[in-house]
Image 1 (tube, rainbow, N blue to C red):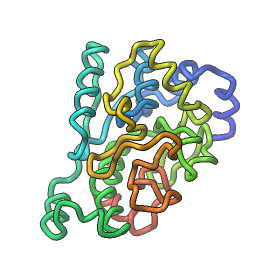
Image 2: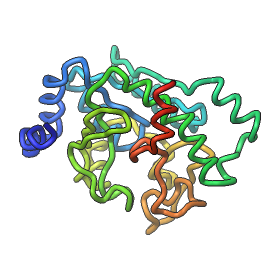
Image 3: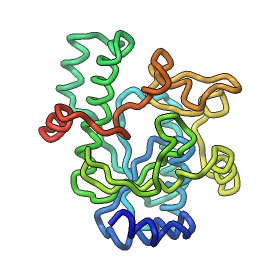
Image 4: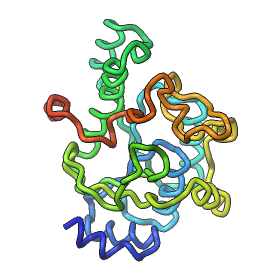
Length: 243
């Protein structure tokens, strides 16, 4: 199925691709936004063209204030459009912070992954439970862990087809689209923040730095994924299935 779908959409515009897949996966297609520049592009395409795709976000509880601000601006720019919101399980967060404190993710990679799983991976499983196709804003040049990113791929962790419409886009193309279409952006981008996640795990980068150098900067660059876009080990899949 992946091969056939790829052939059908690979020479279409991004908007056309979204429209085709929205028709094929009617009612079973969703886009997850974290309000980054790439996600702003896809959100604008979906909302402006009234494409029937559910848009949702995972509010980890540790967003920058600027992220909440651009979230509100999005709702104001596209009146009547909805961004469905998913929060982490409060008992899981309470247990982790009671036992390990507020910044346990700095202590070890295992602790950091635990926090990402609770705040992102488990809520994503819940969000995708009723969908068959998941749209992301990933680009191949973002990270060494994404260089082989395909337009369409099977995601076994969440049991969905994953569509990466911007995989071949450059950062310059992304930024040009936002300017041309007057799409509101996170104010932090102008302050050196390229990839923006949770506030304690994100910082600005310097010119010439890797795009994701400001994410989990205390870890090796070949391991900088929160878990949403990597194959999950069996014990995590089992845990996800119980949420």
